[in-house]
Every structure is written in structure tokens, then in C-alpha cells.
Length: 339
Image 1 (spheres, rainbow, N blue to C red):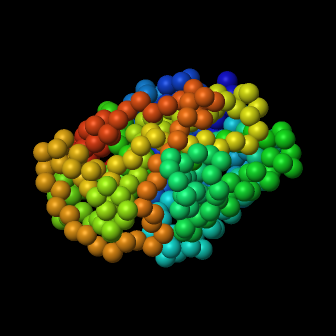
Image 2: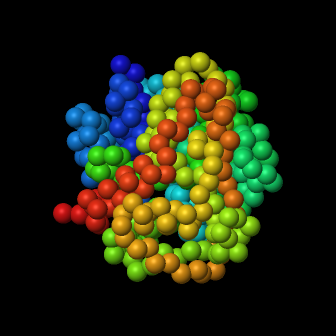
């Protein structure tokens, strides 16, 4: 059976995608350096699926280890999640973002090329649209970035487009995620951030459970329904299923194409907090603080191209995201380090 390499497969989106890949019958091998993830996540994936996972601890910046891995295994395709992913942090340590995300991906592509593996699904991001001129966002919008994280994704996208132009044996799908939220309905895997969460849902759930005192809302003077930032939140299980559809698409030799993975509508920070308070029965106290550098007011997708070309669409709504996120938080007070 052909083998799929999953880089960063112990991370939040990676671990949920591993579940969907295994359940779809794919044979996977996961690599991760655990810089922002935990070995326990893969054990939980094994628990959910009843299958053991082939794993090697490798950093994609280590070209020799990648070379050695590809010399021992024949991969039909690679799903590439491994990367640093926090907008605010990227403004503070941009060089680490370029080294990890850009250099690491360069190593990966060079190794794939050397071993004749030309099929790649890449974790891109809606941040490549910068400050969108209008909404909803379609894939043909002009691309730009407002922060180093987004710029690292955009550089990689450009690299992928150049790679395909130079050699049309390559088939590369650029999946532009909007805002993943929620957790697997089992409560066994979910988002487990290091330190103060960068993403809204784990931040709110840590306030609800009492780990954090209050939600910091970055700016309430945006041109939105209530002044707080609006984002297109997508259930992580829906997002994971999009990767299975993308792998299927690679068989059709699609060239290098980008797809939005989003719901197609947005919720504000305060709307998300209210939904969480209602479902959890807990108060979510909040304070308004200064805007974050690099943040934009509104961002939501037109996901119709993914529906047409991949046969994929989001099926789980806000209620499922909040219920599953809260279920994960209650069962795992300290994430994967809960005893």
C-alpha cells in the first residue's frame, strides 16, 4: 500500500488529519519535532483509530535526517503541516519563522525532488490575502501579507508555484485555512497550546475552566458588527477531512492550485465568547486591550471552489465547534499533560 508522509502530524490540525487519513484507509508515517506538539497526541490518535502509527522524531530543518528518511521509505505524497503558526509571535521572532517555515519547506521539497516524490498538500493560510479589499475572499484575490507568519506562507506558496512551473510533474495543493476551532468529538485530541493561547477558542475555554482570569480582546474599534475582529471559524474535523479530499484530488494531476477551506461566514470575538458562555454555562469575563500588530478587521472565505473541485464543504457549525472544544478542555484541564 502506498505511504503518505505527514509532517507535523502530532500538532493540532495534523493529529486530527491523521485520524481522518487512517479512517479513510491511508498508510501514514508521521514526523514531528515536538516544538509545539506532544507525543501523547499520537497515542490518542492510535486510541481513536485502533491502529498503530509509524513515527520518527525529525525536524524538517535537518536535511540529512529527511534524506535518510526518504532513502528508507517510498512516499506517494506528503501532507506538510510542520511550521510555526502564531501571528503575534512572528512579529517578535521573524527570523525563526523564516528559518522554520521557509527553510524547512525548502529542505522538504529538495528531498522530495531527489526521490521522485512530486505530490504535496501544503498547509497554507488565509493570512496570504493580507487586508482583503472585499468579502468573501476568493482564491483569485491579490496576495499580500501583514505579518511575518503570513509572509512565510506566501513565500512558500510562491516557491511552490515556481516549482510547478519548472517541472509539471509536480502536483501541489495549497490549502488556505481560515480559523480552525473545536476538537475531535471523542475529547481525546484537541488544541493544546504552549503558554497563553494565540487562538481564540482555547483562550476562551481556558477562561471558562478557570485557568485564565479573563479574555483579552484585541481592539473593539474595528468596522464590524460589534467592533471586534470577525473570522471564519471552521471545525478542525471538517478541516482534516479537506486534506483527505485533497489527497484524492492529487490523483487527477491538478498542477499547483489553491483552495480556501472555510465555512463562508464569520463570527466576532464577542459572539464567540457569548456562544461559549451559553454552551459551557460559565461566565467569560473579558477586557478590551490594544489591537495586535498585523491583525485585520474582517476575514471570511468563499469556499465554493473547494466544493466544486474537491467535493468538500464544512458540515459542522459553531455549536459543534464550541461543544467539542469545551468537551476537550473539561477532559484535559492541562491539555496532553493532564494526568
